Length: 205
Image (cartoon, rainbow, N blue to C red; front, side):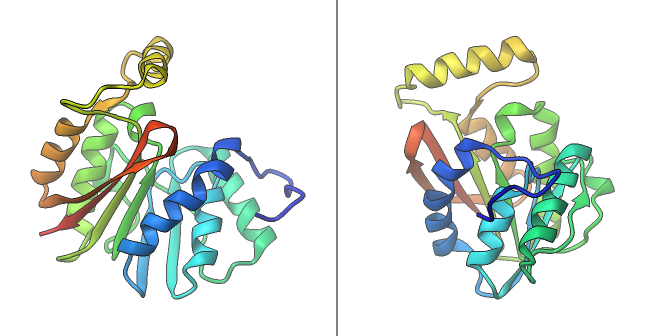
């Protein structure tokens, strides 16, 4: 990650902790070439790191937030990574308004629990429409699972999220997979990650 931070670029300590485990999963599921759409790219640090790791993929970061878009642009301009495309404004909850009509893979990191359920609905609608057969939707974050004990830290995190916004919260994995299936996206892989998170790999039928 370039350092010092360029003006306008945001940084999250959690990115430095989880980017390598996420990258290892992405290396096992992303296509060798094509276009990756990252929905809700936030500060842009994951986009920068992953674009550099996949030089044969075009990486298109997007977000709905002005500050996030400015941060992504600042990191991109500072690093000069040639396959990291300019950020686009994209509201996950409004798939009809997405400024892109195709992608070979869709990546979404740490959005589902800090957004209304409508954002997840939009994400699945959009990914189901854009992806080709066999195309990958990659999700990362915490989930509640049937028959899997939830870590106390995740229960506390869920409570804190719902206090901040009643529409937020850690989602039940079966709800997410059922919604994905309704859009032709089948769960192909579940990978346990550090800090009680999961990586989920869906493939388009």
